Length: 232
Ligand SMILES: Cc1cn([C@H]2C[C@H](O)[C@@H](COP(=O)(O)OP(=O)(O)O)O2)c(=O)[nH]c1=O
Image (cartoon, rainbow, N blue to C red; front, top):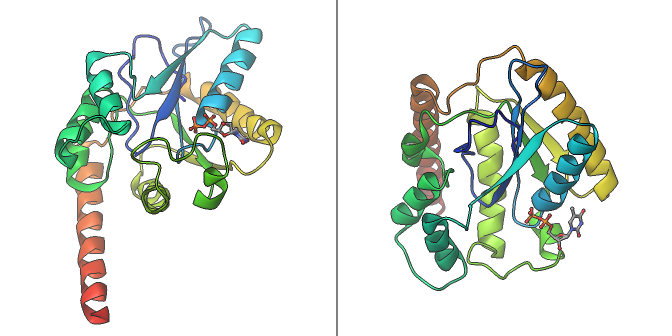
């Protein structure tokens, strides 16, 4: 979910899985806030974004939601075909389609294609274990909704959170009741909107962060390779 200036409609979140977003423009403020809601499939992004949108509007705060991938565009239709199993695509090709559609898919070198996109004022990460997500409705219908992949997605999110020195990440337990998650999100959104008024909107993966992230990723991969060689 994003809460943002309405001029920005190509917001990006550097992560796997669908992102629901919300744009907000408060006339009394210099600008609105841009907030990304993330998490594994079925953690509750769509539900919580809808609740937040209703709440902001009932408080007379203009807000707009955006969803990634946006399956209504021509590129979104190609992503949809891939996710629902209709077509096969090379990993790099699907990554670029996600980027063109407004978001990224994995860490490391592929971050390059997202450098310079608007950076969120906050990321709200709805944290849910794979076991709990699997018990929720509709799980397993799409290509990425497999146990192993979703476990890796959650680990990648945790890594991304450590690498992201630019954007504040807020981890909310999505295993709570809908009302408890909603209350946690409300507090974060309120604080983020107040802070965003006085801040310039940043750009995603500025060169320094990007290079640092790639180096960390490369070192980690080398360590993992060495560990698996020792095990073999
Ligand atoms: C928010 C929430 C959703 N659900 C269910 C409703 C939906 O059938 C399913 C997925 O919710 P949804 O909001 O669509 O998740 P996402 O957008 O992250 O994929 O989970 C719960 O069981 N408990 C919850 O607390």
